[in-house]
Length: 291
Length: 218
Image (cartoon, rainbow over all chains, first blue to last red; front, side, top):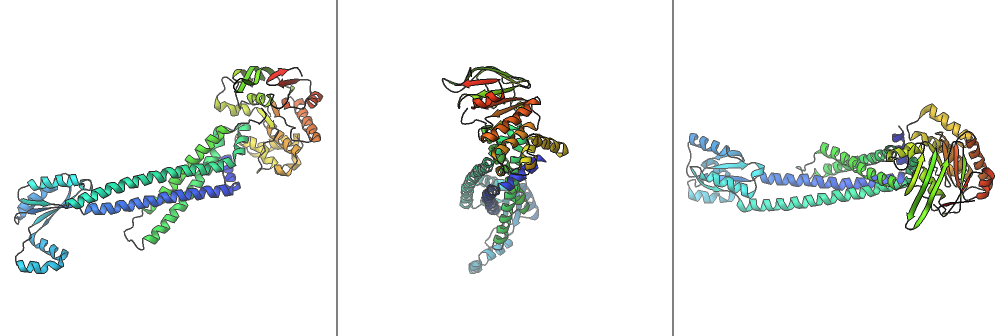
């Protein structure tokens, strides 16, 4: 009871500092939240690109159903292969027509269907790196009946390069935002603790245990952090509502963001208040100018 | 009760704030600690409530020894002694009543029993009628009375007073001293630091005079 009451009194009677602390915590959490949502969506885009990575294994001739099944299951059994799809000569032609509508005259000139049948092989996400794709391609190329194997080598290389740079930049940004948030929030909460230095002093004087001294401040820090987290989650959600009108695929895991922001706020509030009140409690001494 | 044995305390090199001090305060004693500013009075009191520790020698208070007391035991020691200061150290945002009650609340006391204790302490210093005032609304003397009530509410065996009349007019000072005498009569020991030797002489003949950290004949 005492702890709860003191925490609430502290928050109310130091209204301005409480307000500033919540404001700064909110801003830090909001920035971090923006970063998180940005990261989610960045990786969503990368994921979509990775799903486009495929190997085309062209066959020398049309296969019988039995041969096709056999080869298909062999490829499917390989490590890293997610799916195998057979593309017959006819289907290849249809796809070609859809993808290149302007080239139909060219095809008409040839009369016969020059496109070979093939297997379209999709890979597991972890196997979409240049090394792995080339490794799987080589293995597929060895199978009997397969003439050539193709994959967008330069495109995959570029994607891989981009992912690495983005990932590094993202981690760096996350670390910078994370650390500066903790630093700024700890210092802000320190202000609220300094404002109540006299209370700590009196508590020590009348024999309050260290736990009793710290608990109201930590509770106040948790309340401030929780409020700041909830507000930042709310604003992020509003931004999501706005942005999703223009980008249908905008990824926003609402529940995770709300819970995550509040939990991060609580953690920030706890760390900030705990460190501040602890150092302040150690500082308090009854030294008078004339000892 | 309070036993100080050959205590030395230094805050900077080649200079002792207290040098080889021995002193004991027993139940019912009223001891004055006199001496000019900087003579070591406050340092001696801080050693007793263990805000600081001696460089040499030993302080024993209510069974706690300065050499062996653990950090978590210091609050337990402070609950057994009352302390008042020149600047009262009252919380501005709490009423007189709340300030006194605060001393009990920090150890989990509440309810009617707590209220009774607070009212009794306030009655003892004659401040019951001002219990709902905020400290900045009452006089210096009354603020010190509130501080005394807070120090007494736990019924300590000793009351340490560090220049308790330093911020109060002569008339108010005498009233504070009278209250301290009343408290002393009921058995609580008083150790009061003051630079006012005349006041000390009027009240008690148990006077310890400090000069530059050493005990001298007053």
